[in-house]
Image (cartoon, rainbow over all chains, first blue to last red):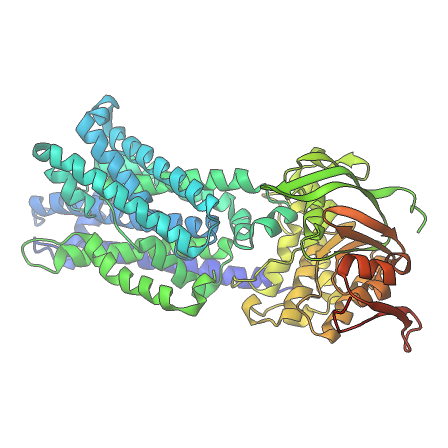
Length: 348
Length: 267
C-alpha cells in the first residue's frame, strides 16, 4: 500500500515558500506607503542599495533614505513579527484550553502584559533593568500572572467555552480598571502609555525590533518542537494521556512559551486584539488542525494580516494615523460574534 | 492461553473518592491476560473509575494497581501507552482531524520527537484500520462520521498503540444492535488474532453473557462477584443488584444463556 503523505506535504512546503515570497514583496511595496511621497521605484532602489552597497547614488534624497530605513523598515518588520507572534500564541492557547474562543486578547493575557508595562513604568521598576529589556520583562511579568489566574480559574470550572470566556472577560475588566487607576494617579507620565495601550506600531524603532525579535522567533520556532503534543491536546485530556502525553508538563511549558510570545508582542505594540482568534480559525478551516501543517500557515498569515492592517492604519488618513488595534478589532469583533452564534463553535 | 496464571492487572484494596463520595471502596481483584473481561454494574457503581485507574488517569487515594506485577506508578506515560490502549466513552470528536491523522496519533508513544515515520509505523496504522474496517474512511473528517464509525476509529487508534491490553468504556452504549454485535465480535477476534486482552465495561447483560470470558460485577464500589458470566449473572444477582425480576433462558439461536427481564417493576 502506497501512502500519499510525503507528496501532499511537499505541496505545503511549496506553498510556504510562495507565501513567504508574497510576504516579502508586500513588505517591500508597503514601504512606499506613508506621509512622505516616495515612489515604489525609489523605495526599491533605496532598499537594494542599503542592502547591497554602502554608497548612495546622487539622485536619491537623503531624507527619504532615513524615512525608509529608520522609520518605515523597523515598523513593517515589527508589524509582521507581532502578527506572527499573536497568531502563533492564539493557535497554542486554543489547543491548551481546547477552546476555539481562546486568544491572548480575549483571555486577558494581553491586558496582563499591558498592565505589567504600565506598573513597571509608574513604579520605576522598568528603569532597574538595563537597556532595551525593561519593557519586555515588565510585560512578561504581567502576562504570566494573568495566564496563571486564567489557568487556575478555568481548571476549577472545567474548560467550557462559557466559563473560559467569563474568566477572560473578568480578567480584562479587572486589569483595565487597575490600569485606569494607575494612569489616573500618574497623569503626568502616562500619555504615551495610553496611546500605546490602544495598540499601535507608531513608536516602532530598531531598538524595539531588537528586543522583541529574538523572543518571538525563538518562541515560535520552539512551538514546532511540540507539534505532536499540540495535536494531542485537541483530542481531550483523558484520551491524550492514555496515548502517552505527559499532559500537565506539556501544558505548562506551552503556556509559558505562548505567554512569552504574547508579552514580547504586547511590549512592542500594545494591545492588538483578535489576530490570535481569527487567523488560526481561518487556517484550520482551510488546511485542517494538524499543527505541523497549519502552524506555518497561521504564522505567515498572521504576519501578512497585521502588515496590511498597519499599512492601512498609517496611510488611510492623509495627516495622522489611527491605532492599528482599532482596525483589527473592527475586523475581529464581527468574526467573534459569528463564531459565538455558530453551532460549530466547539469544533477545533 | 498458556499464561493464564500470570495476572495482567491487579487491584489491591483500591480506594478512591470523589469529594465526599466513596466511588471505589476497597477493590481487590485480578484481570487475566488473553481473556475478554467484562466489568458490569449499575450506574455509579465505579466501573469507569476502575477502568481509569488502569491508565493512572486518577490519583489513587489508597491501595495499589499493578500491571504485569509492576506498580502502575513506576511506568512513564509513554510506557503505559505501549502496554494499554484506552477507548474512552467521553471523547466527543469535536475536531477537524482526518480519520488517518487521528489514528496515527496512536503511534505517539512509539516514535521519538525527531525520528521520521517508519514503514513499521505506517504498516501498523493501516493494519489497525483494516482490522476495524475503517480503511475506506481514512481521508474523511472526524465530524462527518456516524457514531459507529467514530467508535471503530477510536478503537483503531488504540490498536495503533500496539497495546497488549485494550480497555473500552461502554463501547456499545450508544450504538444500534448491529453495530453493538459488530464491535463486540471485533474485540473477540482481536483477542485471538492479536493476542491481546480486552477489558470492557458493559451495561448490556446479554452481551456480557454472549461475549465475555470473565465477568466482574461491581456495586457501590465493591466487587460483588467475579467469574464466568453464567456464574455471575444469575436470577438472584439481577434481583439483588438491579432490583429486577428476571429469568435466565436459552438463546434459541446460539444455545447460550440469556436474560429475560420482567418489564413490570413489581416486587
